[in-house]
Image (tube, rainbow, N blue to C red; front, side, top):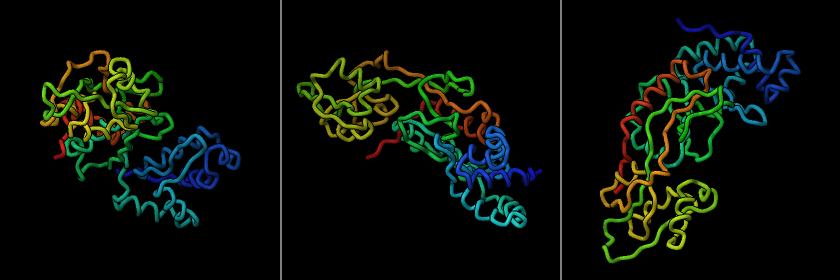
Length: 286
């Protein structure tokens, strides 16, 4: 049985949309910000659609939220219109998944390992080295390198990531090459710190995104640290070090405690966990 759309949820969503956030809507409706947040989330679940982007400075409407707002200009007619829109089955839930560059590339290379067009949800993939805020619902699932500590977050361990040094198989034993190392924001990453502590004098090329340096390594310009799910995928690369133990990290799927039992979130988490526990490799480009 389909869940009925609550008219009060629609009215309160309209107030939040016009106010641009919970505080302004709370002043106008007399309903607490916490209750307004729950009612908007309830409406999103009812419609299987993300209506707002929750940001520190307020709410921004998604395309679905903007469409809903237009329909709510005449609220007496909107209830039937929205119900019909929902019943068409076109409002599939978008599940936002964030990860660092390498892991996001891994997901995209192995998309059919965790999602098909027939799934009840649609993936929205965000390659971003920052930890987007799960608590504020900026994302639904984050792939992280450690267990979440906040009590409002839930986590599921799905493996480990190891790092080692790689270079092109074109490099001969008597040929000396330098290293490529990240700079700017990525210079603070553990891999970059290890590089500077152990091979600073040998760095010949720097880049601001480590994922952009792979082609340099394959061309034989330098060697670099790579996640082993990257380095082992390329037959034209050879590993020139043992796995660096101090850089080994866990791999976790992180979600909001309140959302982890939602059927579509649970379905997506299970599919991602099944893929990542197999420790897949990238699909190399030639």
